[in-house]
Length: 118
Length: 116
Image (cartoon, rainbow over all chains, first blue to last red; front, side, top):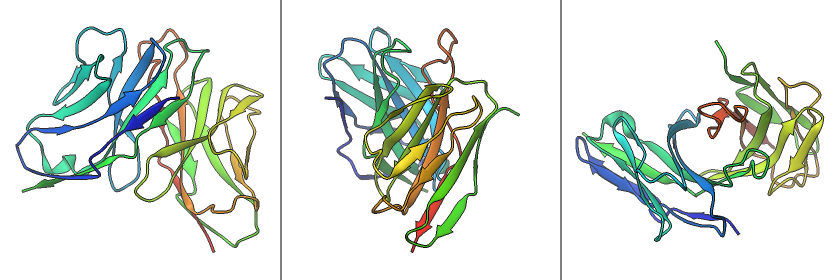
């Protein structure tokens, strides 16, 4: 069965430092997609970055990059040069299958609360 | 502006009452989803719908019901059978296949339901 594990319930990081949020996943599918979302205290879910299982390059979006290690089934999020506005909950998520009709469900990890210190 | 709206932002109900949460999107997305989030937890899937007049149970469907009569709307009813209905409820939709961002889910702002 699908499973997403985030082992860091909370992290404190100094402003301007880089931070890595851990995520491991379990799936028996060859084709899947991995996501990271940010949830500020307002509750909205903000999409950050996506990695397809067949993508050979690690995904990057501005200050966000996804360190994808397929053999180890890990998909860690790296935030470079952290800012005070990065303080939020961060969720790793996975969808099995990249075919639209075969699997529309996404499962989420339990999240990591990131706090940036000035 | 295209997006997903959920109303109201905060909802209070007495135990034993059914309550319906609204979710509307004008993004022309076929697929829509309902999630529940408890404090300090991740999101859990309640129901999802890939097309009008069709929907499937997610992982925690008991005590909930949905309808999908229009593409734009996917209301969720929290029934009195739901034992612990107090939670944050998020609605999402997904672009159709073949688009450059078809993998992504777009979320609404959420409804915080409190049942006493």
